[in-house]
Length: 109
Image 1 (tube, rainbow, N blue to C red):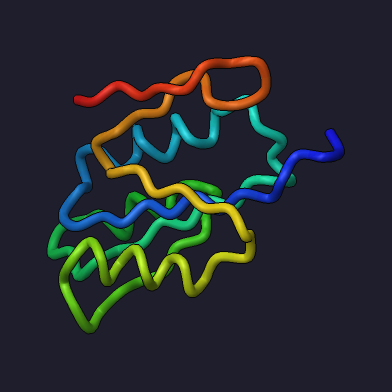
Image 2: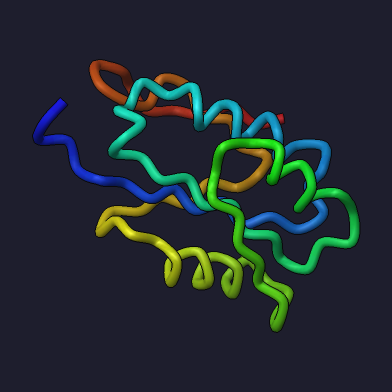
């Protein structure tokens, strides 16, 4: 679909191995043209399997190793983003119906 902006979705996560997979799957299932959507998962010095779970999904995985904070991780993701438009859900938010012809919302666990 032409005219749709390129969007980067940045998902910062710290020790989120139990929720990050569902979050990424929900983002990948959106009704937004996949060629216009870039999902960047940022591991923020996790000590669990968060990075391994991220790598099981067709998303871009980057790491913030210097500072453990969601702000630092989000900024690392923004630096890696290719799109001018960006969004940054938490790893416990599961987007529903975001895209063409849908309302916006999310459900939390």
